[in-house]
Image 1 (cartoon, rainbow, N blue to C red):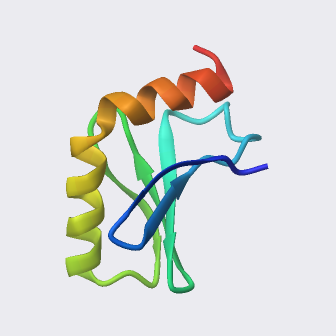
Image 2 (image 1 turned 45 degrees about the vertical axis):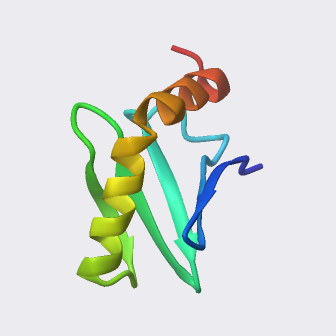
Length: 80
């Protein structure tokens, strides 16, 4: 199961429900591309499969603007 927690500018932000053993992170997809973004200790790209640098910058801006929401959802799904 991969619950969607946010959509913006065509990006879908979601979690894989079986990844609770890793540090807090969120996945993002758009147009067949996917990235994994660390939420802590700082917002950064963990993995990138196809996004351009410009798209990654947009993704990081969206994550930073919604960080509190994403962390709340992460802990709701995976526990603290």
